[in-house]
Image (cartoon, rainbow, N blue to C red):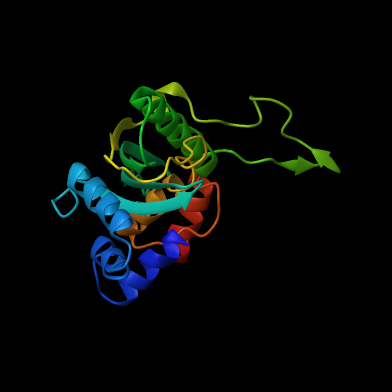
Length: 201
């Protein structure tokens, strides 16, 4: 859904953040969240050479989460590198900020692993992915810098376990589109997927 929002923004010739905000006139809570994550991530400023930003948001379990991924793509080998993720979260009244930050960081890593690597493979009538040597997950050296910003809110208390996971895959995919002009439409966004998409243009 969040990649399709980006696709519509691109078709309309509009900035993905500005496009989202224009649709949220009646949702000040989500507008504030997106404005916060954009400001903290430096949205609108020129990223480092070879890098691009992608944005996405999600609502579930009573909590709003928005993330900006700073990404580069190696066109030769298809490798996506996520350099930095900026996250803003509004889960209502916060009891323990450290728990909120830890859940967001864990959710981002879990979501990145699924987005970039995780894939069950089948062969000879069965599952070939038997353990971590045949089922890749994100490694420590591949983890990006992560910033979590909690939006001060007096709204109803929301959940904080799952909401950090869903926005990261579309944020990365949207950044890849910004960097390459190619829209990735299936997971994982591993080198083979990227190279195939680049060849198709």
